[in-house]
Image (cartoon, rainbow, N blue to C red; front, side, top):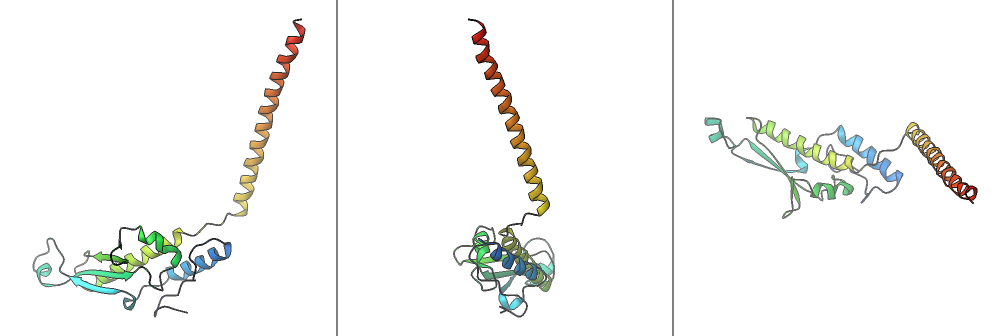
Length: 174
C-alpha cells in the first residue's frame, strides 16, 4: 500500500464529494504530516549558488533543486489541480520544481527542498478538505435562523398593521 520507503499511498480519489471521501483524505493527510519525503521519490540536481559568499560559492555546488512529477503515485489526485496552479509547477514538464540556496551545505539545502515540497503537497491536499460542522455550530446557526424568522415576522406584522390602519382611515373620512 505504500509508494516509497516512508510515504503512505493516498486513497484513489479524484475529488472529495462525500463525507466518506473526506474522512479517507483527512486520514491520509494526518499520516502524511508525520512523514518525510525520501530522496528516492524525487529527482535531485545541484548547481553553484549565486551571490556573495567568497570561495565557497565559486567552488561548491550547494544549490539544490528537487523535481517531482505532479502525477506521482504518492501525490493525491484531489490535490493535483491546486498544485498545477502553484508557482512551483512547471507546465512544460508537468513537474513540481523546488530550489534552495539558503544554507552553505548541499545536504541542508536538499533537506530544505524536501521540506518545501512536503509543505506544498500538504497544503494542497489539506486545502481541499471540507471541515465538518460541529454540533455547537449547527445549534448556533439554528438559533440565528429562528431569530431571523422572528424578526421578519415582527416586521411583516408591523407593516401589515400600518397598511390596515391606512385602509380604515379612508372609511372614516366619508
